[in-house]
Image 1 (cartoon, rainbow, N blue to C red):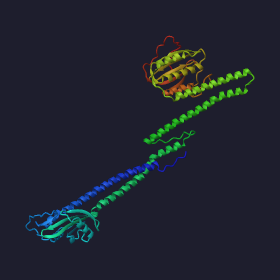
Image 2: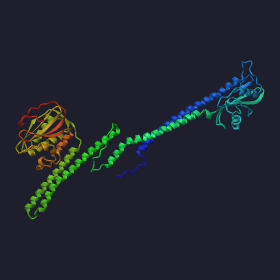
Image 3: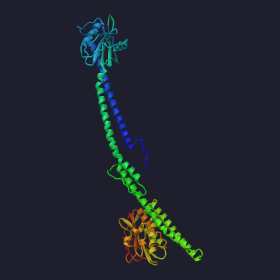
Length: 505
């Protein structure tokens, strides 16, 4: 059988699902980490900028005439505080006294024109960035309180605070601007995210490599299972899978092997049955055809004789078909299992076999116990043994039946006084169409004992054949006990013909 190729194999789909989950998980972790760290840095930057208002008031020792940030005159308790008469003097003093640290810049703007910038080399210079200055002036045009914002400048992203400054009797409007380079502040965060991304990529690559080989190893039994299933045909059912390990796939392998064993056994049985049926039907067909070819149609006696022979052979074929149908029924149906009393079953068989002619029947032994089984099928199997015994026992000879129990099983037996069964053939006679020493019984199909064996096996038991003193054979059905209520033979009832009392094991 040719398999249609699939665009994506199970191995790729499994690995793709694992990688997708890993990617989503790593992306979520990385994004959350980046956002948290970035917000922490921005919060720290804002705190540093907000602190400039207090620093500006403290360092410059503003007097009552100076309004910083809030527009409210600030009183000073220091009698030696500097007195500023112009905004320019105040901002010049602030710029010179408040030294910006590394990665920060300060600038004094008066009436929209940059006037003062630090003369130290610790920070960076923003006095030449006119676009930045115009943006700050525009944002604070009507502000009376500090303004914080972020702009894109020549240096990069700058986070700034602009603090309005006014002095009484001076119409000039001043701004003290402190800016921080965000790109530099966020550089550690960016570096950590890049490092995390590289590590995450390495992890995904490792998952890809390891997952590819692990998925291949896990799916290899399924590949072997598929190949084995493809190789199985009706002519070759012997392929099996190696079951190694103790995982779910190994359990599946054992289950499939068990299924193949049952399938092979079923096919073998069917094939053997067909061969046996073909063999059994070939003989009557040959006989009828031969007599028809040799029949003289002008001889009335020859025609009548050939007709009788043909009908007899057709009747035998009919019985054969009926027995095959019965065998299929007992082999495939669901049994109605319930507790069966062995004593009652023995009495029932004794009543039914009494009508079989040409023999004296007796119930020699009764056992008290209970088996779990289908009473009708057990009765059918036991009667089949009795019918078989009647065919092989000389007319007028007695046949005994009985039952006995022990701690394990119940034994339902039939003892005849026929020619007996040689030890080498005692198992073969339970096979389909097999007979002891190849003898053919009139009216028999060779399936009777096979039916008995099938019913017995369905009850978890087995059949056996033994010898009896003085000749004959004992056929026994062994059935496991549900429980035993007694372990001794029941008293013989009136009307029973008893020849001897024995326990056959």
